[in-house]
Length: 167
Image (tube, rainbow, N blue to C red):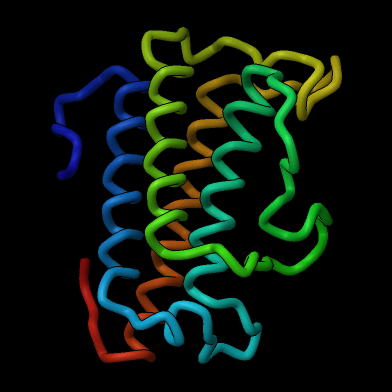
């Protein structure tokens, strides 16, 4: 569901749009076979399930490791701990487990950001050093654009698989 047009609380607006894009991502992936989830029809070679895993780790990197400064294991686990590497799956990654992780990450984001001043600067010591730390508002906007961008990628991937379009 889209956020209400009268919603003026920037943090809540970001959080509701993030919830909406998580729903869109789940809809785009639901109904694909395991082979379709793990295979690619694109020259770049990424699979829909790899993209989902990327979203899980991306949100974690920006909110838990980034904004709160929490030390997290394998912040680049979506690319075998190589920030510049291609997305990769583990043998036990499944649609169900990664969707559960995506939704748990969304709950974590809501707990971290809910009621916080959007101008709050990210903590030092996790993803960021002491200089050039972004605001919570900047981080949430970045995470939102990542979800929107990749939901668009999934639109194309899904259409190539079975012709399904739309939300």
